[in-house]
Length: 289
Length: 291
Image (cartoon, rainbow over all chains, first blue to last red; front, side):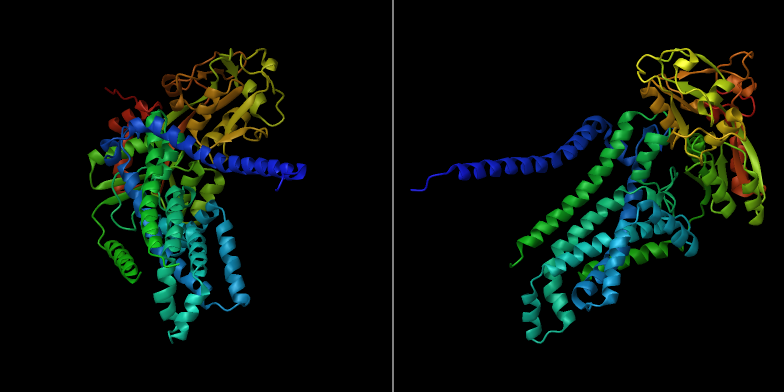
């Protein structure tokens, strides 16, 4: 019979130790999430009401609601998505399916990595120079959203490219051997099999876009605007900037309003994510491999 | 996928076309000083009731930000808690803009201490020694006090970022135009931030607009010279000029304001507008009786 030697026992102990250590680190990750959510719900929860969500801020932003900021954030995120998802997905398809391995491809990949590393305030300044002044969009939703779109392009491109490359090469080869063209293969085999990964990229983009303050501060968001935006050429209020405003700029704002605004911002992102995660899970269920 | 793209394109097209059919509303762009931002917001909010066809968009960012936007022509009215610098005036004229200054109110710049701090009165020269470059005062004991809760005894200097009009005004009025700030201060990005920090830091001293005072901080009475009377910051002492660090609050326009901007400024300087600034804790430019 097998009998554990001292060495075996020692290995088993070390194994256990590392298992616990790594497990602890993993669990530690959820601590900040739980803490943030708990604090926000406890402190901001009481502020949330129908009126808070659907009315304008009044009395120097100390009372009333956050409706214009909520609407503004939805505008900013939607226009940014419209601008960045088609470009990002197309670029990823090229890089994954068409691009030859040469200096140009390497340069493009390098550019994407660098774009992802540019601080958001630098994107903001670029947005002012390019969209507000050069293209003459003025400070507007369009300028702000395009700035956000450029900032989040790397997220979409990288997520899409990874999910395209996760589709087994054999699928493509099988398709080609049936006489399909590259585009037919992409359209009918590669894309349907990678939609879930692309959606992940979009989810990440939504979260980042909704939360950013710096890039929209100079390009399109205002601290206070007495009307709701009607076109992409209007300025807008935004949840992230509103949160900054009520917590650092305007005196005597009740704490519930500050925490409530933060809670709505997180809630908006989480609910958008939830929808996408649902779609993703459904699509993944249909995967054949 | 294709359907998604079509929907997206359609949405974008609708939005883009909507831009052409602008409404009849006049939009006034108002940007600048963080000190003025809360009252600027209150004016914009109240003006909605006065003229529904005029909308005022308010943005903060600091006096410098507002002034440079006015010079660039991207805003109609720049809020400033300091006068325009000579270099800014030159830049404006270089751009063909003649800035017109409108004094819309006065602000007493209050010196804030933690409520446990025993100091009630300070002179301008004491403040300069604390904040100014080369100043000797580094600890509270040098001022002859022990601050409960401040074990290090070190004075934590709370200041503002350098595009703040409050920063520039404090430098001019307290340190003197030539003297710089001592390094190592905590530079905050909003008037309210300063007060929040001092409220929670026994070792701290800070300066910010009187309008940002709360019940949890102490306001220091200031002497303009060692033998001068100590004056507490208040709306009244700012109006009569006895408080030594009170400053005018300005709005700048590119050229004489006309049309909607002119009407808006007239309204701000009228009884209703001035009562709003008084309500926000600043001193009005004219004596008004408000309910």
